Image (tube, rainbow, N blue to C red; front, top):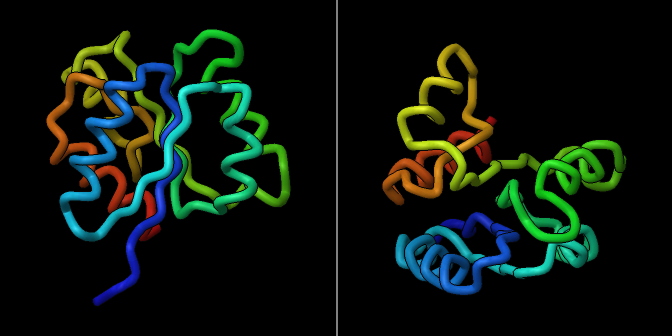
Length: 126
């Protein structure tokens, strides 16, 4: 069996985290650790050293975009790909924003899970 893609998911919606964890782990090729508190995201990501971090953009406290900027500025985490999740854009809007990009960096929370899996696969094989 090949090595699983290790994912850290940060989203303030507990139900969304549990659902995504189940859906991604059901593929048999991903393992997901999640946290619902943006303030704890940096420590979790530094500790877990995932293959990819998936961050909800709009969270109470520290926003996912702020977490992403801090990760990118830190030499110990700057190599970890980041995929942002947002409920503020439709799947079509997220796809339109990604046109011309070599890899997706934003996906709508309304997108089919297959689209999320494809984005994860793309970002972790670059």
